[in-house]
Length: 563
Image (cartoon, rainbow, N blue to C red; front, side, top):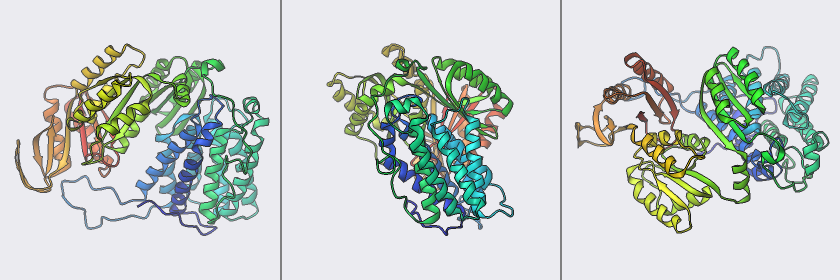
């Protein structure tokens, strides 16, 4: 059931207050996303700021929901929970850190990356012991830390943006806190100051003044601060940030390409595992490659955002610094054409069994279709997805053998519309990931299809599932509750525990060689399982790398790919 926001005591800062804030922020950004997209003219008029902020807040909300749920399952060979298993009550520290971490790993675009750093700044303060500070003073200090860290994360801060709005909110919050205001008083002061600062942005930034709009990122931040005040006070903000009641917003000028503005052509975003000294060198390197550089995070995990003309060089710089992953490269011209309804040259449509996988493929640029258990998408659903991709050429990844017939039927239907479609015969989501990793939208269509087909075919796949009843399998008789290890679609291992079965499956798959193991964890599988399997692979196969992803809701307990 979705969380129902409840009003908080006006001087109460706890995990439930953070949860309510998160729910209200997602709802507010969801209502405002199209309006914010429409006024997006800086730093690039690509009409996606509202969407990026919404997706970032949604990622943060998912992580928070997981933190406030039941404790992770034990990675043991037992089939049931221990005597002390059950719901836990997270502290304020756990809640805000989970909230900030979710924003970090899901940050989208320039504005979403800055929002993630703002939330990290809040978490840095609220995540510590409050000492003798009351909730009002504590929240005021958190807002100040947030603004300071956001300014430091941006290579070249510009006034008239969401940074300016954050700074104004922080100053007002500090004044309210110094006057012994409650947490709700501080939040209200910050919200009011943010709205006033937002109204001033057209006079601070020439691009906004010429277009006659306020800053899009600042609009989103006002919505988030309004949600904070509502969460702490139970009072709904008087007006949405961009509906034209609180802040008049004339219609913007038509968006234009980055090239038309004289800026870089590509946006590059990736998560990076790296030490802080290496990140300092990375900042300097990327600053010389492009602009709109924002690097946020800490404690070994970073989100890197930059606009460049050479996306390969930006990714290579990340490889030098550490381990980049979830790499997303967007051509601004393609985004503009999508916004205007013009066709792009080529797109990928992928059917995926899990919300986490859908997000992962979406970050790689694919249009995704979520396949829930027992509800394989039919041809009509796939036709709709192909048309939403709005491309002249489409590569379709059906995701499983049971979806290939629907994929073939959908391809035939859209070919009648003049769209060139190729169906890659993937039988598992991990084969789709392998194909997507070698996708080259700038190469010829035939060569791209051949390369993606070869990558999928070279990936052996496995799935772990729990038997629902006694039955005969190719590996023998299984009982209800047994863990089944299916390799290339056939039951190869029957075990009593997830870990031991996964290790047996990996040993069989790696017996014929491999260079990369991909693990996709289901929603209830703890991270400790991935850590144990990574150690298992490293111990027996030193030359094999391992990458781990979260499959999210609707995904199998464990998917394994070996390339």
